[in-house]
Length: 265
Ligand code: PGA
Image 1 (spheres, helix red, strand yellow):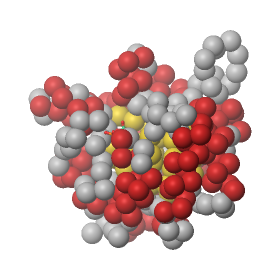
Image 2 (image 1 turned 135 degrees about the vertical axis):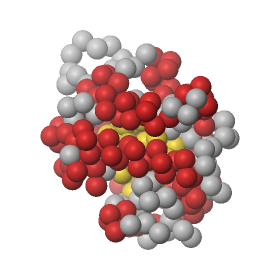
Image 3 (image 1 turned 90 degrees about the vertical axis):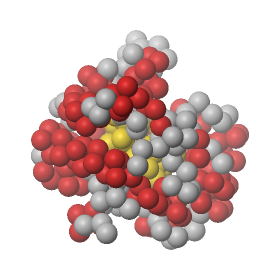
Image 4 (image 1 turned 120 degrees about the vertical axis):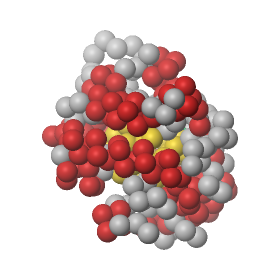
């Protein structure tokens, strides 16, 4: 049973489309989700679609056209407001395309592109200052997990990735996604009890870094091989308020089944 605090936090299911879907494919996937998702679901949960930058406008237009309550997020942003940063996209640019969220610090960016927790914190600060909600990703490698060092590792990563975000985090609404690197795209998942222990430790660290009020309201997501068949067990955990979904968000039927299952239907 979720506690009163947990019940006060709106569940969130975010689809991370990664580098999938052209503009036309993204619009068609969005339309498929809108057509299948009962209106009631988006009153009970924040459903967030995170397409590539190139499809943000198409996705947000499709949602607006249908007056759907689905929300839009980017998969990254620059920490800089503007300037000579070839290839980068600013917070103002994604906000202009109706993105209300942005994923920052995904392990694919940390691992493949060398993004540091300091970089992630700067992006989270820029998002919060503009009133957008960051979904800050953290998570351990298989080696760290097997050594039993997950909580120490993740707590340090949260502290470093949230440095200085406190001031605006409450208004913007902070999300932290716990994504064990070894669970992403592999079909492997930790036990829901493990996810709960880590989520509780994340919330405690958010409290230490950003204060009790931000921690109480912050939503902690689990990510890594989330499917329609396993999402309910993660969502049943007291400190798990949502899911960040990769592969299973790329098909309208599967994603809608996942959202409904997350809501206990
Ligand atoms: P997955 O990806 O659901 O395909 O494991 C999750 C993520 O990387 O956000």
